[in-house]
Length: 139
Image (cartoon, rainbow, N blue to C red; front, side):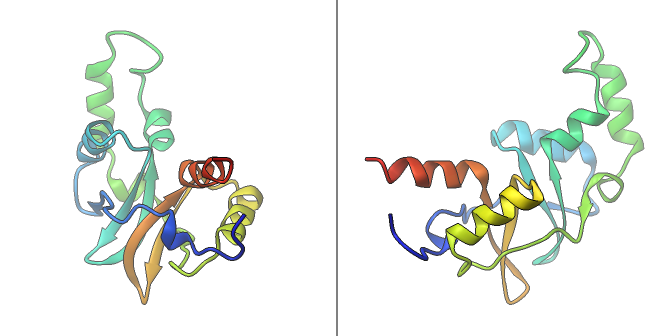
């Protein structure tokens, strides 16, 4: 196994984002259409928050009960991204080594972290990225 490999080798660089002033429905659409579970919330290039699919699922009934789409839409219209997102999320730099990232994921129970360099969003790294990396070590 490679020692001290940076997360820049495993992170996703084409990050789907939302603006903090966008509607919550747009977050749901982007999560579904891109088959992703986390979206950084930005103000320009600055990361101001992050929203996960789990955050949305806690608000909606569609996953639990059939025929509740109308209720889900009403909830999504009543709330804003700022009310749902995790504000000022922990971030990592592209030079952070994968081992240190795994320690953060294990200790703090995060599943995704924005990757920021000099205050600018450069990517996102998830537990899935880490699992894929470790699986490659066995090939």
